[in-house]
Length: 481
Image: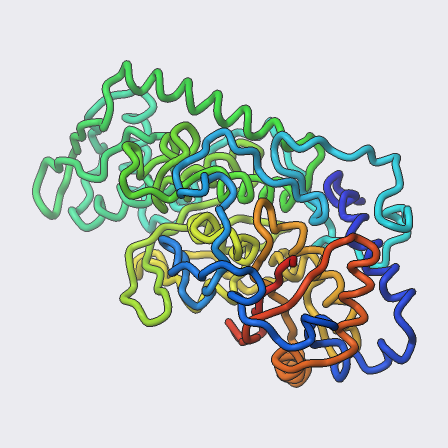
């Protein structure tokens, strides 16, 4: 069964089909040997980013991994040209990707789309990860993953007491069975990971008892009862407006991508934000740091019935000291995947790559040691954004995937004219051959880019050195000129 968003991929999938129907058989007979290069004419020689866009390259954006830079200097969606927050900036439309951003009108599914008018049922590729799982907006927005990792009844009872204290808006919790100091540190930590809705919860608290027998804790909320009530009302309103864009009957991936895209394009990473570490900062102020991004993602996912958790640990940019960080994991299609909205927001040019990408994130993200053994396995790839949208190639289908990728990334240019360009292969020899071709000039790619221009009016070029950024993933850059 096809989810409602999947039908919106007709434009770029039909584009791929038409391109290959119009390119000669000799062009696709040897895809890896012939479908990589630079545009023809004045663009035949590989250009530098500066030559292509006539703009300087910025340093790494705050929180963005340096191995994904350089990026063209184009205002990020959700920011003004000076980098200041633009809360009312609409999310760029993503019709060519299968997901539309909030405030973007949905196309009429009865009207044929794409340059050939091909119906979705006739497309050669349909995004997906297998048998889809559909969301239930009436599901209770509580998912206590980390509570279930606690090892003893006493720990779980202490967790429940802390939870009741927050629900009743009290400031102390007494434990029927005492726990050790080390146990209460773990219990309180995983409680806060499970419950982003208790945004008033402080990180510190007062233990009463002895080191081997803690019998109660006391804490001072970050806000007064009146402030909590007002802030909760604003959070509820913001969440409702965001989630209106997800229709009943959407799949879990469609809901997840929508939430991920909304947050990463509307919320600004800002160390000076007044509510920088909670979901109020993300959803209402639209300014926060990693804790706010992660808690908002988790909160919204649970609101539509998709299990999601927060994970704390460190993240390492290339050549830099690991820094404290918080990100997420989501259960999509029955498998767990890591997600980093903060890094997606920090550099809009690489936004898609941190959605369900275990291979990329395993090299840069390290969960806290005490959480490591209790994390779900991140071994699946079917709902990784590259696999889901068919951006995975081998020696036989490389040209087809490349054309699909042209449309996919152009649809994510947003207000700018460039994007990082990622493709993936589990066939190492094919990937290595693709790297060679991407870093050289080849006449056949010119024909595909020219055909793409004829169908869409978009003049595209691949530029910058193509490199492996993980075991199977290649990155270069794509721009419109």
